[in-house]
Length: 191
Ligand code: GRF
Image 1 (cartoon, rainbow, N blue to C red):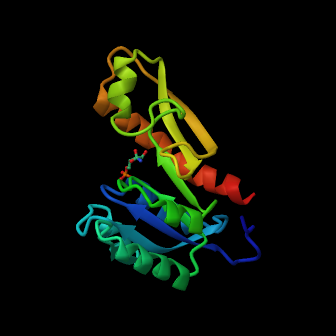
Image 2 (image 1 turned 120 degrees about the vertical axis):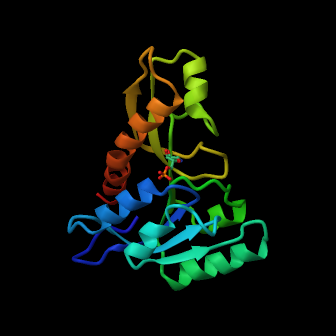
């Protein structure tokens, strides 16, 4: 990936579906002088995603894309190219991107997943970790490949699971570390 040269930052798009706490955190990170990214677009498959407010407050273009219609993917590719996007950060984005899309943006799409990959790909990761009596859970930032949650790992961090933990407490603890991990992973990519 391109390194940060002078003050030129990498044009980034963040894809969300829900709350957007990672989006909020990435926006704050992008404003730091040492950050290698600038967030140009927020894309969502949900017209009223809770995280939309962070795009609005920060004057970042928010685009709803209906992923049910295949033609819209071409429009999305166009939009990303027009905005010279060189990094796509998935942050709680619940749609699976097509193989064609991944090929066109190969090596430029990253995701944050709430488990210690390769364990617990897919949904309900905390429920499954508790059921499996795992000692640890955590979060992983990885490249997005054509196979779900299977791309090369960039960084991951563990969180201990205690007897009293439940899905809610784990989600809270993991979100807290995600807000440190995602920026760290981006810095790792560009350094
Ligand atoms: C995060 O926990 C991330 O690991 C998962 O979805 C959640 C998104 O949270 N992929 P938020 O919308 O950023 O608050």
